[in-house]
Image (cartoon, helix red, strand yellow):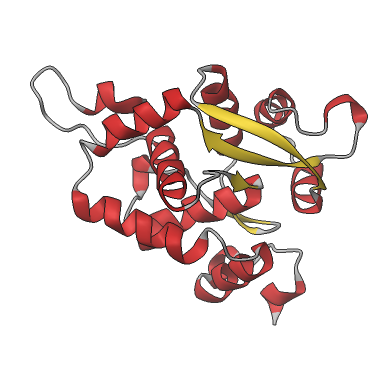
Length: 197
């Protein structure tokens, strides 16, 4: 993870890892939005998926996505968020609004590591109904993202910034509709009617 691993002792670029991509995506969000926050993990997941499809951050540089209840789903994102929060790179804030998307998406998920990570993020704590969470970089996370950008070719960074500009602030239903329309193979297991029309 992070910039230190991108360059070995011989100075050769080693490539991004999924957690690096997450930091860079959140950095692009912060560059365009004063709050720097991405509300809902569902939105963050779709943005990371689009980073692979439309900004060229693919393979081992990004999370692995499979079709699930709301389109592309990368279950490794949850443990990564919890770990990066522990490291002080991310701030995760609970919002006062119930998160129906996440509640339904996680209900049937049997992956214990993911469910443990979700609890560590404070999602649905103490038997309360799950609330939306917003994810943003801490100061330490911003510094790590800055170091990563030094290793990222300018064109790749610009593609990521354009992607954030285009999709990060769409209403979630519009973002999902776009992903379903453009990448129908990721909508085959969706619970939303728009995916099957």
